[in-house]
Length: 232
Ligand SMILES: C[S@@+](CC[C@H](N)C(=O)[O-])C[C@H]1O[C@@H](n2cnc3c(N)ncnc32)[C@H](O)[C@@H]1O
Image 1 (tube, rainbow, N blue to C red):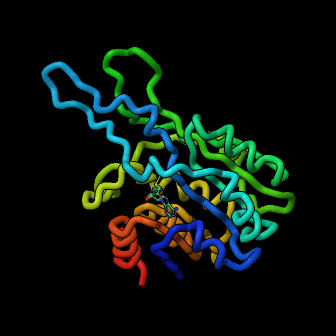
Image 2: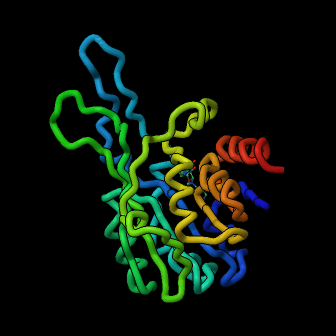
Image 3: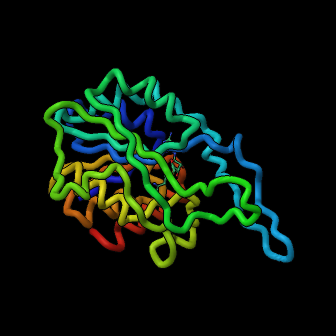
């Protein structure tokens, strides 16, 4: 079962009842456009595309999300939020005092974009803020699974959509790892910034229910078609 809404999630969340979501797994804009130095030019080769999507410029203030996230989440629920290092402090400031635990999970990309001039570290890690209260769902089977670190490549074809291309489409393998640990079959997973619906596919593949919201019409349609082509 899934429900997709084409709206601004700040409006949508006001209509969601209290204590009904088991897991919020979401990937809001990182707001990194101000740090981008544009495309990477290479001698005698095509430049590496380093465009930042326009939607990344819409500033997301974690203080404006904490009330509704807390309200709609069940007491046994978990929250995972992808973010960049530039916003980590804001997420901590807004959310840490509202939950028993605030932890960081790292996704290590095994194939990050190269830096051919060797003038800095590769951007090979992404941060995921993890939040929960006492009594939350946690399904670890091994100590290895408990590492707050997961390695897998960035999304590539055929999983990655060609049209529309979404610059931050997340890999299903990573999302399934997080969903398996932090929810149970038939649980309701919510992604308010769902892009082209990767959290939805991962949720349904694991027999969870999914509710998602996306403001951009083109991404929303792609997500709708993607989920409908697999699940009716
Ligand atoms: C980082 S992307 C998510 C990508 C997604 N994880 C995937 O794999 O496709 C963030 C998405 O949030 C959407 N967005 C930005 N502001 C929004 C808002 N206020 N309400 C709903 N969606 C929003 C953007 O259009 C963008 O597609």
